[in-house]
Length: 182
Image 1 (spheres, rainbow, N blue to C red):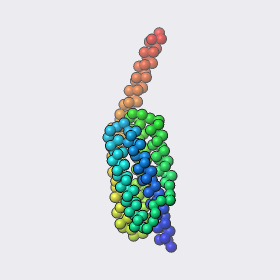
Image 2: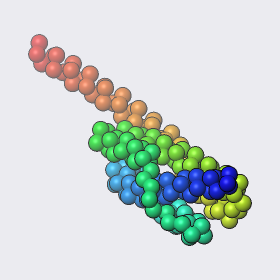
Image 3: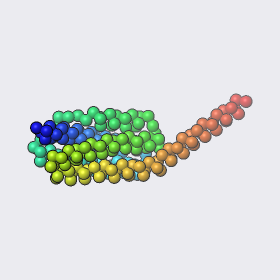
C-alpha cells in the first residue's frame, strides 16, 4: 500500500515536471528573442534544444510506466515564466539581460529541486532506469545554471556600468539645463 502511494506521488510529480518543461519549451524562444547579449541569446537557444530532450526523456519514463504525461498544470513554472515575461516588459539593454538571467536561474533551481525529488522517488521504487534518465536531466539543469552564473558576472557588471553612465548623463544634462536657464 505504501509503495502504491509513493508511486502515485511519483507519477504526479513527473506530470508536474512534464508540464513545466513544456511551458519552458514555449517560453525559451521568447527569452532568446528578448536577450540583447548574443551569448545569453545563444544560451537560451541551446537550452531550448536541451529542454526538448528533457520532454522526450519524461515521455520515455511515462511510456515505461504505462501512464499518460497529461493532466496536470505546473503552476509553479507558470509563475516563474510570468516573472520572466514581466522583466521583458520592464527592462531594456543590460538590465533586461540581468533580469532574464535572474528569471532563468529561478527556473533552473525549481527544475533541479523537482528532478532531485523524482529521482529519489524513482530510486526508492526500484526504477533504476528512470533514475539514470532523471539524473541526466538534473545534471544538464545544473550545467545550465552554472553557465548562467558565468554570464551573469559580465552582464551584471555591464548593467551596473550602464546605470552609472545613465546617471552621469542625467546629471550632465541637468547641469546644462541649469546653465542655460541662468
